Structure formats: structure tokens, C-alpha cells
Image (tube, rainbow, N blue to C red):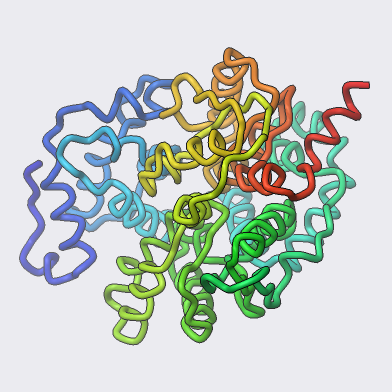
Length: 432
């Protein structure tokens, strides 16, 4: 793609990076075939290629984002399926991140929308505040249909995602969890913000499983959000502040590996080197942290786990942040098969389920259409349980799924001697 940035503009390293990405695009349109919003809506501006044109115009002309710019950029899920498809290696992830910052800084959103986005960005990364909000939202959950009829779709969507009660789990809280037997390695585990409130059992299963196979695990006290949530809303200062705090915690701990059980967070953490490339204080520390970051499936694949007797028929939903963001396409399925599960992939696996961080709240209509499409594809495989490696996907699918939705690591922990995932017990209870 031909660009026309001035020499003065190209002195800005952010614009220089954007210029290089834009020039890599050859307009081929392969990305449109796997872009969820284009597949649903058929609008060129809701395809990666169309958004690239919008971003080019905004940045070249150095103008504020318009309402149309914001609408089409906001509709992007950042699923990154386009990057898997692109034959030219266009780094759409970095380009859409730059565009989101530009929209956030230059577009004056309507008051209610601005308030909702600010609320989500302020509360979700803080586990204590988020727990209080979820407790209050649980009381209002029965009124979700009323909010839907009143046209308050975002509030209705948020309430629909809210659990009626919050689980409590001691394992996984800040502390040191020693290995059983001879220690083979030291891991730091991302506690996380939303996941530590909504489903702390995921990290508990991870700790049990790693301890059982000789790894000690530490959950640091001062870490909360990796910065992913505000980052994808264009709130870059807040995102970097959260990330710096996390980087400091993990640098001081100096583990062999940083383990992440929420793949959306993992994609961001592995990109810390780029996010902090212009920060003279954090550039090297961020790069070192990113180099140690591993999705839990990556670490488990290194451990050469024994064969197990899982026994269930599992449909594996590959989160976009795993298959596209981190290019981890087959490892989790291989782990489940080795543990004794019968594993099937989802038809149209490359298409997003519609979760995408806060997307299922901010873009509920598109999100729900994608969820229903994904669940129809999953149902065609007749699973006993759905496995996924990202809490956002799990929460999204569990809204309307007729079978339990469980994190991959919980199934593996169970297969190798841990307790059964609570979702399986609940499903049996509901069936009687």
C-alpha cells in the first residue's frame, strides 16, 4: 500500500511503525474470508482491509477520528485471524492498537458510552473492586430482560454475563506453592484480575498440576492486571502502568517461566517488548519478561506428561488469542488426547466466538451472533464437555451452552489425579 506521511510525521516512531505496516499490505483481500465482522456484516469497512484504509487516512491526515472511524474500529474484535491468513505478514495487531489509542485520544464519545468504557477500564483490572461490582450485578441479573426491552443492550449483556454467585478458592492466592518431590523448575503464575474473581479454580488446578510434576509456583502479591483490558480499549497510559507493576513483580521474582492461563493476557504479555520499546527504563525488562512468558499448554507440553484416562468426549474451542495471537494451534488438543480424552475440533474454528475482552458488552449484537454461530458449530460435534484456554471464551459460551465449558488445565488436572472440575458436577446435578 502506498503511503504519504511527511518526513516530519515519520520522525514519530509510532507513525513510522504504522507506515511500515501499512506499506506491507498488498490489498489482496484474503483477510476478508476469515474476518468475523466481515463474514457477518459484509461491509468492506468492517474488514481488516477496510479498517486499514481508515487508519491510513486518520494517521496520514493527522485528524481526529470521526464517528464512522470509531464505529468500524470499535467493531474489530482483535481476533487476529487476519494475521494468520495474510500472505504478506501485515502486523494488523500493532496497527489496530495504534488506531485505538488515536480514537480514544481524539474522538468525543457520547456521554453514556464514555462512562461505561471508563467504568469497565477502571473496575475490571482491580480484583477487589471487580468482586464488589459482580456481587451487586448478581442481584440485578434477573432484570437483564427488562434492560433489553428498554433498549439498554449493553447493560443487559453485562448482566447476562454475570454469575449469580462468586466462587471462592484459597489455592491460587498470592503465595509460594512448593513442588512435590524434587523441584524441576520455578514458575510464576499470572493471578490475573477478572479470572481471579470469576473462576479462581483455573489457577488452582494449574498449581496442583505443576506441583504434582515437580514445579514450584509463586503468585506474587502486587500483581493484578497485565494491562490487556485497558490496552484493547485504547487507554494506553493505564495499560502501561498496570504492565509496569507486573513487570516489576516478576523481575524481582526471577522465575524460570512465567505461566499464563488466560490466553488473551498471554498475547499481550508476549508483546511487552513491543509495547515498551520506547521506554528506556522498561524496554529490556519488558523484553525479558515477554521471553519467559508461556501459555500453560506450552509449559505442560515440555513436561512429557504420562498417558491418562480422561475418558470424556471433548470438543476443543481454540481461543483466537491462542491460535492467532500466539500461533498455538495443536498443543492443547495433543495434551488432552494424551490425557485420555477423545478430542474434536470445532468447524469454522478460525472464526471468533464473540467474547474478545469487553467486546461482548460493548458490541452485544455482533457478539451474540458470533456466539450462537460458534455454539451451533460446537453442537454438531456432540460433545460431553467443551474445553477452552481462555476465561472470556468460557464465559461467552457458557451463557447458552447445553454442556459444561471447562478450562483445558482443569481437565488435565483431573486426568492426573486432581478433583473433577465443578462444572461437571453441576451438569450432572442439572440433568437429574
